[in-house]
Length: 171
Image (cartoon, rainbow, N blue to C red; front, side, top):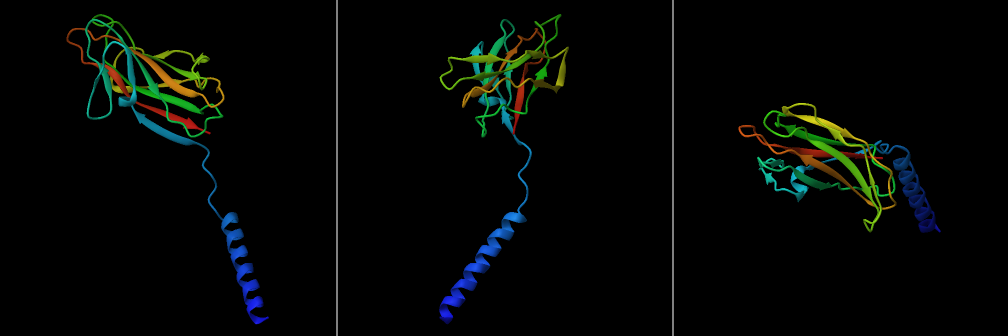
């Protein structure tokens, strides 16, 4: 009988301790933000060069590079809260062919259904980096999200333009 009472007391204290740990645990964060190096991007057209800082650049003086950057996700049933691409635009209209443009894209699991977000671009040059805030588009159930960018050709004498990183913030 004495052992049973001791076991009951131990079970009570274990239950109490676990209940208190639930009550006093830290609240879940509002979002889950990840930054992805641009070296995860794939050139769809043109060719890109990569550097040891995780960035990709278009070094061509003749053609733009179109790239697709997959986004790593934890929440596959809700649209991201925000998507931001950090780009380095060194292309001038006088010597190159314009601005870097990017958009977010949501695809079904099979890739057969695609929803494209609004295209956002740089305005002029900025070798220190510009943050493009992309519009997260409707989530297709358990689908994939990507960022698609066009990196313009460089003008003769211009430094390369490229993408440094992409940040996704999920609910």
